[in-house]
Length: 307
Ligand code: FE
Ligand code: FE
Ligand code: ZN
Image (cartoon, rainbow, N blue to C red; front, side, top):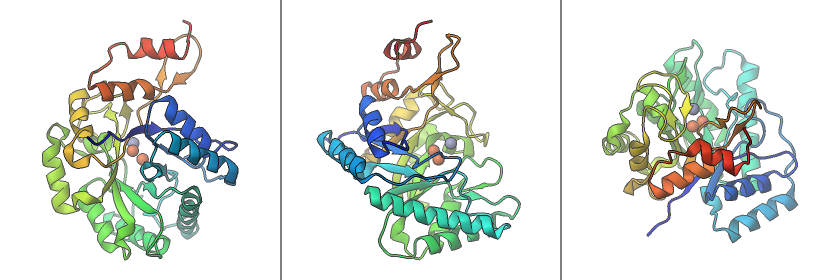
């Protein structure tokens, strides 16, 4: 039997880099993970420490984490869809190029990217800008893969349906280097029905091809279908629900695809303004296929939070 490939978003620190990410993933009993190479909202990036990276890779090997399942998320301030400000557009292109180089140094071959927001330019122009940018970034036949994430359609976000993703892929010269990352919260908020995931996959297969799915973000949603909101919720506590998410996670056709949790940190009301990662417990729920009604209590105990 093939093993479930499951992990979560983890941190990557200035000093410890990937080593911090691996240790955090292991603390959640995950066998993969996703991280930003620095703060997601800015483009400050520190030099990669070779020694720490080597240690991180050793730790992955020892714990059966296949680096091919590890994902980098590009910072969300990159916007390839809007070229009104040429400097900003070029900056996004150059930054993503550098991000691919960083990925290569780390030995990671998948980068998840929000396709971009057209901000008033309209869908067609926006999609063309994305295509032009990606053709510059992916000029070589070989190198890390960019996974276009399906978006909720908040504001002028592109990639809110399979057709838009398909249009982008069609325009790329080195098609082997573009794949897709599904996000369950985004799909729901964009208007897709997750109660019949097999049907959704069939439709994806007809439009794009199921072999293009390289990653899935597993999130519940705080909002109803078609809300175009993009607010993630903890597993089982949102409008998608535990049973539907379990069916997606264990879908036979997606066995080899890494599943990544991006659910919100949980706040525990003890007067301290702190939040705690739920991932260890959500991963456990997923492995058991059983919802944990004592999630908050378990988090409280695990992190030794006194009320
Ligand atoms: Fe994302
Ligand atoms: Fe996501
Ligand atoms: Zn999101």
